Amino acid sequence: QKEVEQDPGPLSVPEGAIVSLNCTYSNSAFQYFMWYRQYSRKGPELLMYTYSSGNKEDGRFTAQVDKSSKYISLFIRDSQPSDSATYLCAMSLSGGTSYGKLTFGQGTILTVHP
Amino acid sequence: SQTIHQWPATLVQPVGSPLSLECTVEGTSNPNLYWYRQAAGRGLQLLFYSVGIGQISSEVPQNLSASRPQDRQFILSSKKLLLSDSGFYLCAWTPWTGGDTEAFFGQGTRLTVV
Image (cartoon, rainbow over all chains, first blue to last red):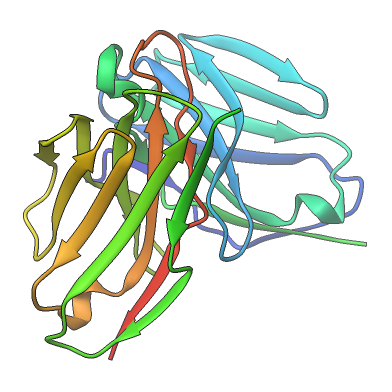
């Protein structure tokens, strides 16, 4: 069993739709949870960064963490064609170099069509 | 501001040939540095990390090695490439001070071993 499971999709939605992306994990020691967006042939860029359970909102993006269920989600409201990318969930332990020692999901390929 | 550079962007190498990928970070001192690999259809996997000059930790056994000859320089090497070494290699850094922080990724090197 992988430490982090993420449905690779692909996911295709019309412009303006609400997109829901999810990951489950098995290591209860994970403390930090992140969502990265990766355009084709580019490095990942951080979208959302959360610590512990709860919700965090930034513009059209909302990240949710449920540590009791070992489940994290990313919601994208009013999706745009420019949101078309691969979305990677990632998580880490706390402290020192752990912030960069990330365990990633496989990534979900999202296409938003006009 | 801090920036991270990786080169080359694309590389095609024959099986059995040597490899050297370079990553440099500008605008910060004593960063923690990381090498990740992204194989086709898979998430990113941490290969090596470094907390200082000459200090390298390996996360997975493999045909590759890493070195950190200078504070802001991180090199990924191989003496003899295998077909299975093909992938997208990403360098990342985090500040040495720790605390809540994201990992910043370079734009990656796409390596194809033929």
